[in-house]
Image (cartoon, rainbow, N blue to C red; front, side, top):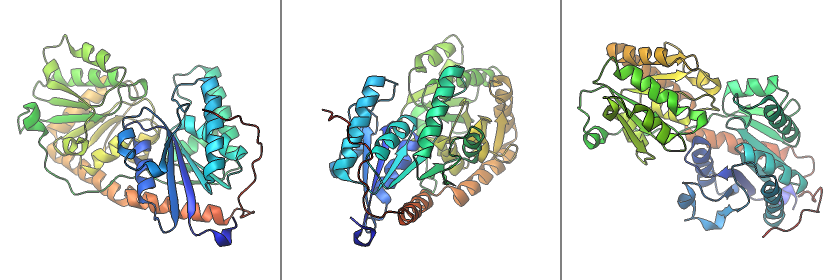
Length: 399
């Protein structure tokens, strides 16, 4: 099929799992909102994510591959590459756009050997993290360098991640772009959360949203809450999310008299309403690509207190939209939360500045338009416009 015959570009988005996270929500939004006069979007994911039900209503363009799983499983990972390769050869997308570390590695390898004309990857963060051993970290960095060489174009969601990649030699020969992970900018609505939880209407409420997993560092989150509540028992904390460390976080607070001031809500569909009913936002992640929850907090005009890690520093301006805290400084974070409560006018000003920042740079429809323009440009620049023959045709079939 030559370019002169292409009326719509087939774009396949590949993601490891449809968890409740920014990368997943933005990918789903892109698939649903690309101009269908110009594109035929599809989505490939591993099964078992909390958002699976959201896409099952559109089975014609959503595909689940059972061997695509989050943990590193060499044999299953090989089977996932085989399954992706066969899927690409069957559906023949013009463009493969991968997301998340695992799908980014396996998907780009399979797409390269299947002869996909355009291979794009978005770094929503990195698979190598500060807590890994040097050997494991260096192995993942080497994998990212290799897969960057297979990529037509790389997308970064934060300037900090782009700078880190360049410093590590990732993507040295590949063009790249900065495309922010956007959110839907809707007018603030009323919130019922205080009534639901029995929180007084005049109480100061601090909210945090995120997975209870090591990256999000929920134990520091509850340590900050404890530090605040030891000095001011009128404040309430709302923690939205769930995961492997939730019980440990709850147990940490169980011996405190003020434990009832910290509300563990699990995952909620009304997170934006909860933010609107709050006064400040708290984030203690150890690393971030670009934290969607922080973007949503700014959209709700909340000042933020957050550890100053990679992607956070892209959008939280210290003393202007909140406070950047050195990682692990829970006492300082608690002090800043209390400062915001004691200085309501300054806190309101910071929140409004955050909202202005989001309105300027983080409209999710702008994100979709930027990606669409990139797809068209990359395909036009492909030297051979006809669909490539597979580079290597020995991957076995997978059941």
